[in-house]
Image 1 (tube, one colour):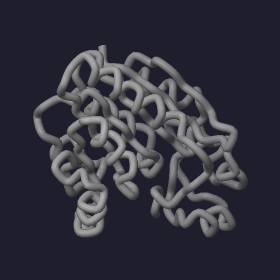
Image 2 (image 1 turned 180 degrees about the horizontal axis):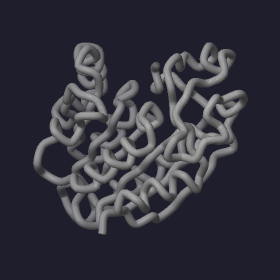
Image 3 (image 1 turned 45 degrees about the vertical axis):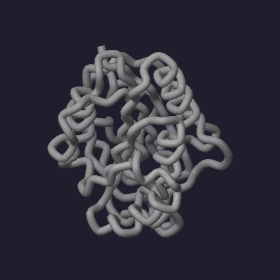
Image 4 (image 1 turned 30 degrees about the horizontal axis):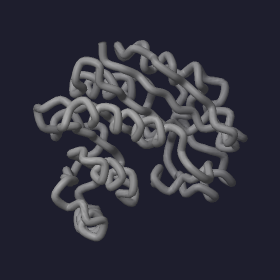
Length: 214
């Protein structure tokens, strides 16, 4: 499954805008801002943070190192973006010990059952500074991906299954997935120990949230 290939939205991403605004505010008050982004995508978001003066760690598959380091070099931010090979299941072990101001997860949690996603969010909260922010973008249960979704009637704790064949072909998602409602995402943050600062559902049905470490 290639969660990174899923595009349900067009135009500016509201969650990215909020995260970049937070980076700007922190940079004004503290000259050092640290950011973690996973998966890296095309490194565009990481480069935006780096151009604002943040130090950025990206975690993505080890076999994507050459491509992503090429993108980092092309962005002109190679001194400010560090590639770390890994995935969400082992992310807490591969990250450095220093806490981050901002953690940004781009849809990767959908590839995990809810209990495992909750454990990972809890671990990542421990990688945030007190008062730091975590930004989550999740594929939505009420988007078109939910049409014919095998686990649509399951509670979030057991919701993990394949998409309808037509949706799987359209979006290149060929393995089991967990789709979220906005309330599910709210509970994910809350049950992980975060302070829930904002949730939203886009016009395309994706759900997004901002949480804080308290």
